[in-house]
Structure formats: C-alpha cells, structure tokens
Length: 155
Image (cartoon, rainbow, N blue to C red; front, side, top):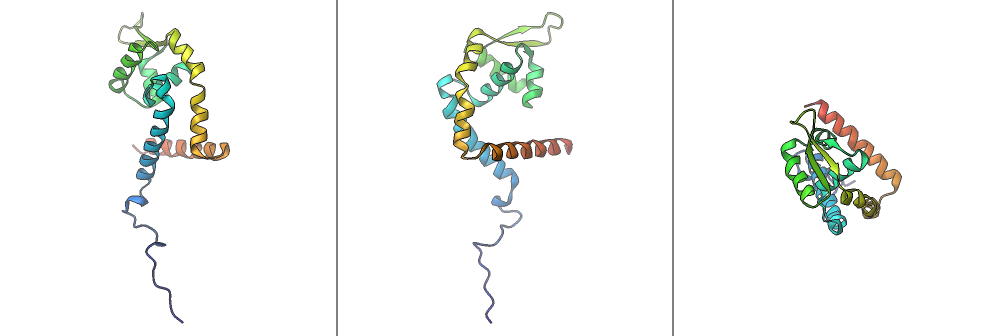
C-alpha cells in the first residue's frame, strides 16, 4: 500500500508564517474594516477615528478629553489634533473646565447633534458589508473584547 505524499497546500502553516499570526489576521481585518468605514463616512466628512469620538459624545455629551481617551484607548496627544479637526468642522466645541483649567470639556455642537440622526445608516451599512449574521457578529465582538481584556492584563 502506498502512503500519500505530504501535500503542502493542505499542510498547516508554520508557526512563524504570516498566515499563522493572529496579529496579521486582526491587522488585515482592521484595514478592510477601515476601508468600508471610509466609504460609509465619506458623505459625513468624518474619518473613522472622528466617528468613534462622535459615538462617545452621542452616548454622553460634554465629557473631558481624558474620558474620551479612556473610552477609545487613546492618549490626549492623539486625540487633540482629531478634536481640533472636529471643532473646525463645526461638530464639537472645546472649552476649559471652570473648576480645573487643565481639563478640556468636549461637547457636541448643534451640527454634531444633528449628525447623529444622519449617521444612523453607518451601522447598517457595516452590517451589510460583513456578510455575517447578527449572532455571528455578536459572538465575534464578544471574543475580540475578551482577547483585548486578556492582552491588556498581560501588559
């Protein structure tokens, strides 16, 4: 009886191969996700990071820069230019806190509040682009959040 020869196409990739890397799967998925968001957010003149800030503010208006940073896992050096662009576009206002001038309060402008209703099409557009069921997406989201928590604990 002849033994089958090893078929490299069916073999598992080597541990150091690019396709074996979780980081690359997440990275390349994030690139694809950002491409979809770029298309969905273009009519609103928002970038993906700006959209994330707007989501935070639509949930809880008039928060500090540090509170936004905590929600988005970003530092103030990354947030400040992003917030300046949102302010220039007329979506938010930035003011110094009365009790502590070191804190900057970011609040929605009228234009920023109005954008919330218009941007309701974005989550639906993303859902359609995934080709996944709602249950699949919720399961993936839960798994990714657990992974994030585990990685943050290991820092």
